[in-house]
Amino acid sequence: MDRGFRSLHPVILLLYYVIVISGLMLYQHPVFLLTASLMIIFINLLFDRGEQLKKWRWPIALMTVATLFFVPFFNRRGTIVAFYIGDYPVKLESVYLGIMTAFTLLCILMIFITFNQVVTPNKFVYLFHRVFPQWALLLLLSMRFVPLLQRRLLEMKDVQELKGLSVHEGTLRQRIKNGVLLLQALITWSMEESIQTADSMTARGYGRKKRTKYNSYLMKKRDWMSLLYLSVGGFAILLGWWLGDGVLSLTPIVEQPALIGREWFYLTVWVVLIGFPIWTEGKEIIKWKYFQQTT
Image (cartoon, rainbow, N blue to C red):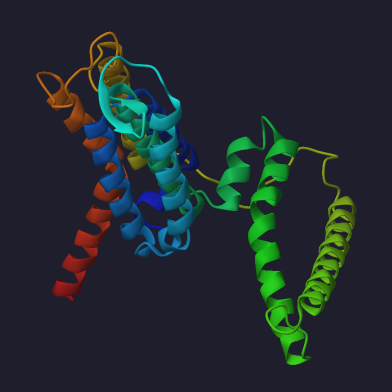
């Protein structure tokens, strides 16, 4: 049973992620992005103790480090030389740009991990079934396709290894042959199931009438309160960006990354907005601890 942040209306959940991802792209400031990354890591730990984040840690780390390295190296804009790599001057503006781009990518990838945990397939179809019914179903099947193939491939590999067919042992030719056999069986299995799924959908009359849904999501009082919370926070974030706070200016003069004036206020708003799942889940944890002590 969903509780806390996961139990909110799907529209509220989608709105939260839209506002946060938009804020990550608007607030291009090292302090704001560093704070956001720490908050998002804590959200991952709160949802599943970081299990999904651990599975994706190496691809995320590789993409982040590659961005951090290649942006300063290939971007030649700027006037202040930070350091030299051989005879190649690396500009300070490019270094700041690389840091902000890397942190933006890092935060977006990590927030999408929580999105997959919170927005279940039923919620996803509910959100888009009226506007883009075919695209919603197609995207949902695509999101399910890669993990499904991975599970099937592991199952088939375990069975084949019991028969002595392994892709890790033997000559290179034999391993390639065994891998091709595994791939062939995997594709055949997937195509057969897709045909069965299509026949089942046709038999059930998919697409002939207006789609019905099993789960009915209704806006409750806490959903309306959450909508007000996110709307005010999102407006404040947009206002701060419009005023130039939370954005590190690189041209014509490189601005110091230290926060000054109103930026502290908008950083607080930023933390409160991103931490919405933390406050929601934290309230449920406090209630659970209280009921445990009273019973």
